Length: 584
Image (cartoon, rainbow, N blue to C red; front, top):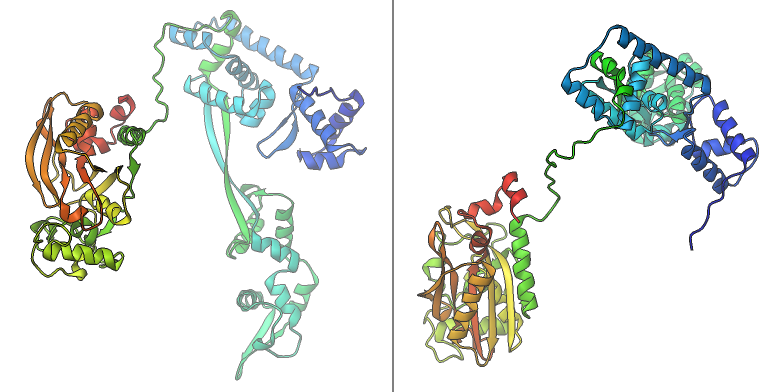
C-alpha cells in the first residue's frame, strides 16, 4: 500500500517562507527549524521544505543550506523587457547567423536556452549559483549548462579556486581549554619558578608556549642549575584580554572562512596558527563563472525563431564502452566454471612453495638439471620453509633412495631434507598436484587449478618468464592412457577452439608414459599446449593413493591465445584500449 503524503497547511508554509526571507544568511535545515517563531514537528517542517523545493521557491546549495530563489513578478517583467531590448538590438543590426551557429541554436536544450537568456540579460559574469537563480534551474543543471555553452562558444566559462579554512582538532581543543601560552602563563607568577615545576600542561605544549611567550616578551628567563622563568608585566596584560589568535579561533568556530576574504592582519594571525599541527583545516573549493560571448548574444536574439528543439536522428550514435572483465581474466573464469560444472575440485595454488612439492614429491631427483639456477628461481629471504608430517617426508625419502613401496629401485642416492625445504616460486602447476597428494585425495576424484608459474626463459611470441598453467589430474581404478588423450583433445578443441590437434611422445620425471599436446595455430604453426601423462607408481603408491592418476599441465596463456585470436602471448596483458574494448 502506498502512503499518501498530504500537502502542508498554508499558514505553516507561510511561516516557513517568512522565516527564510527574514534570515540575513543561508541556514541549514536544522538551524532554520530552530529559528521558527512557533514550534513545529521536524517531520512536518521537512514536508514544507519539500513542498517549497517542488514549487521552485527554495533550493539546497552545495553546503546543504536553504536558499530563497523564487523570482518575483516585477523581476520577471524586468527580465522580459531586457530580452525584448536584446531582440530589438539584434533586429536593428540585422544579425544573420552562419549555418553552423544556426544548427547549434536549433539544437539547444531547454536548460541551455534558459541559461543563455540569463547570461545575455545580465551581460556580466555570473557564478553558477547566480545562474541557477536567474535561469530558474537547479545547481547541477547550471553547472552542465556552463560547460555546454562554453563548448559551443555561446558563453565564456572560467573556474575560480578558493581556499576555505576551518578549525582543526587541536584548534577546537585550544578554543575550549585555552591556548598553550595562556595556560602556561597562568601557572607563572612574578617570582622565579623552575621549568620542571610546571605540571598542568604537557611538555610538548610547554615548548610551544615558551617559544611564543618569549617572542612576545611575556616572560623572563635565566639559567642557574635549571632554567628559571617568571611572568612580565606585559604577560599579566596578555592574560587579561583576548588575543588575536583566540578571536580568530572563535571566528573559525562559527563557520569556515574563505582565506581571500580576510584582511592582511587576519591572514598573518591565520599563518601563525597554521604553524601548529592540526590547529587548522584547509579545503580548496572551485566556483564556476560564465559570461555571454558576442556569438551568444547573436544566438539569443533568434531563439524565438528556431521553434522547438531539432533532433538529427540520422547521426551515428557514439560508441559506448561499458565496464567489463579483462578478456583474459574472463577466459580464465569461463575455464574454471566449465571444470567445476564437470565435477572438478579446485586446489590451492600458493605462489611460493618448497622444493619438496615442486620436485621431491614428484620423484624428481635432487641432482636433476632442472633444479639448477639456470632453470628455476630461488628465494633469498626466507630461504627455507617447513616440511609436512615426518611420515610423508620419510615416504618421499624412501621413494628417492630405494623406490619405497613401489616396485622400483629409486634413484639410489642419499636424499637431503635441507634441499627439499628450500623455498622457490612454483616452477610448474604440478607442484600443487603434489601438495594435494600429500593432503589426500578422493578415489575416484577430479582436481584442477590455474597456477602462476615462474621460470628463467627467453621472452617471445609463445614464452614468458611469468606465466599461467592449467593444472589438473583425475584419479580412479579403471583409467587408461587412451582416456587421457581424449581429455586433452577435448581441452584443445572445446576450450581453446583449436581445429587440428596432434600428440607427440615426451619425457617427464614424474609421469610414465608421457605425452605432449600440440595444436595448429593459423599463423604460428604447431604450438605446444603442454604435457601430460600417468603419475609414476613411486609417487602414488608411496603416498598411499590407489588407482591411476592421469595428470596434465597446460599453458592456459596459449589456450587463451587461440581462443582470443592472438598471435603473441604478450598481447594477453596488453594495455591497448582499442583491443580491450572490441574483444568479446
